[in-house]
Figure 1: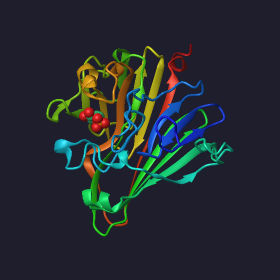
Figure 2: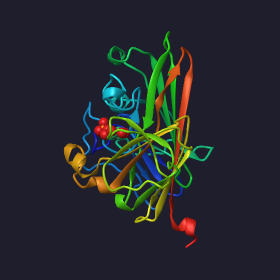
Figure 3: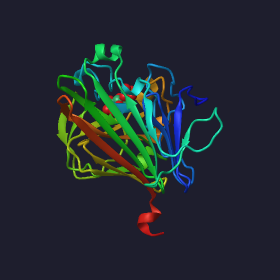
Figure 4: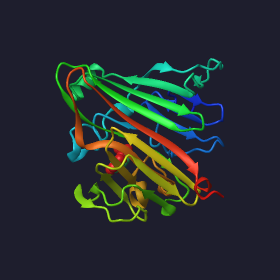
Length: 304
Ligand code: BG6
């Protein structure tokens, strides 16, 4: 059990020193560190680790519904993020003391891996009357790339639809010096304007106010450039056609009990998602969505 959260977790490590942590509550990645031990994900200092609250930060899994209100009848972002998942597979466990979290190191394919599973309880099926298996495989490669593969299988006797997102909270040094490239010229829904559909103009995204948009059918590569930190995140995705970009900014930050008033300066959510067109699965069918995150220092590009 993790002393801060009280929830069980798994730690992934690779020989060059990067690491990741996955909480069984929510099947949620809550830490991803590079070889120098620098944290790459945002996790709020005010995060609440108590069911049914979802943990504010890291990479929550939104399933079987992304969003809330007019986007569906379930609680906001679905229930997967506040349920207990279980471990079904992990790569080489390292020896550790019994009280510590299990640590996994690389396997023969040079990845530290954990695979988690969520299946619905009877109570869950009262809220969403479908039987499914949701698997999340988290893999850390040598050098620190983090790949998350989600699979949803319909094990019911009737078809179902769902929407989905990997709600990644990236850590940034100063949101006003961040640019997002790869979403220019695309259509988006604006969550701050009653889901009105607009088209992004030709420039990279920059941030100076609250931002909450769902970009539709995006390219499968998005770059988040943190000028102050001299770091670029590359997000590659597959099976997740849309991308949500969110920063609550000052006013909304103050309204969230589990988010520090100033913390909006240090985070940006860029979420690989399937929102506009729900995924439909017939009995026995399986869907796969994948995202790969890497973080490179900007000097890598400029050759400095
Ligand atoms: C984003 C949504 O994905 O998640 C926002 O686009 C929402 O509208 C945000 O505010 C956080 O949601 P929650 O439920 O974790 O507070």
